[in-house]
Amino acid sequence: MDLLLQECEKDASCHNAFSQIRADWQNVLAQLGREPARVQHSSDGKSAPVTVEIQRDIFAEKIRNWMYGQDKARKNSI
Image (cartoon, rainbow, N blue to C red):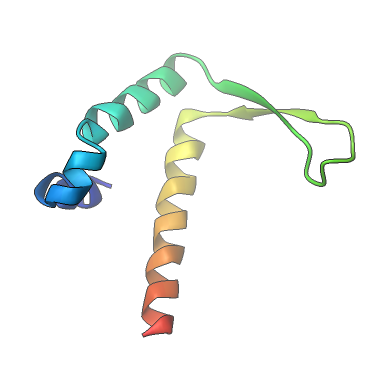
């Protein structure tokens, strides 16, 4: 994640669009560290929603895994 944040900070268009990306990332992790987020989710839009708890470490891991998936998709499309 640090590498991604560094790349955005160096890239003018990314930095202009997300000028506080590092602070935003740190704030999200800090907030989730203090208290997990809870959201209502319905997978098909028709069933009754369930409450999902988003914990800090799981959130960070999911983002990391998602970034690996994006990298693989990019390599496969070249």
